Image (cartoon, rainbow, N blue to C red):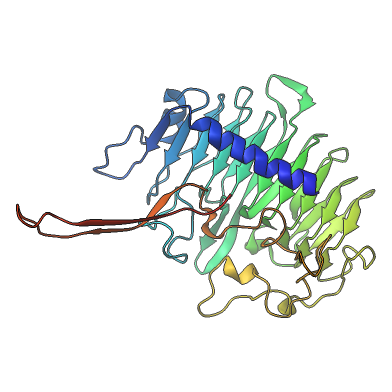
Length: 357
């Protein structure tokens, strides 16, 4: 597990460093903004393999896109109105579905708001990281939920898509439809749509009988998990069920007996004792942080007194990052003096910060 998490960090760092040698394109569809492109598909078509698309915040969607070249897609993040001092413009980068075809191997997607749309993967070596998939209806933030579906090579349906990293995403379903290997699902909030109700048998994480997954440090909010011969570690199943054989379970926490109580697993845990939960002054994402005294604190695999490891999405090698901010500089404050003169030039004050990898 440590090796897989280290691979995730190295892979992302390599992808981002490589893009520094290629062209960076600005994608913005706000009126009056002079950008390179105003839609995601046009930006893809106009870019070259290895380029980066900076998809800026907007009240309008940038649409869907089919990718057949290696690109890095970086958005502004999400829930920015709740997580202050992260971006000066508190609009997310809204997109439709993405379709990864052969040729797009090595692509990275980060910081996008998918608004309950679908990412379909028909190739190897794709990283989907720090994105929001759930979408609200009224006051129910996860009334609709988007998904990632992993299939086969678009030019050869006999070869499943392999080596896919799904990490630090918020509010999504995952389906592995063929006998894929090298599937890492880590530090996500996995769930199905709220309109199904908490007792639903709808699948939030479903895998082909011969697919092999490493699933760690996720929160499974609602729905059924189906997997075989895979590894589940440091997850918290808030509500739902589990089907499968040949799996390895260690240091998971569940509301029922889904993981049993051997190998560091905890069962029949009262979830109100685990998470901070909803309340005044608590953000949508922050509700899934561990409360003081939570049985998930220090309960993770490999935890020691000097190096405690928690269960859940905010711990492990790649903790969940609030608002899905990509690890690059972001302007979070922009102040301009309204009036100037020849003797008193206009003052501009810009504040920039960056989150870690």
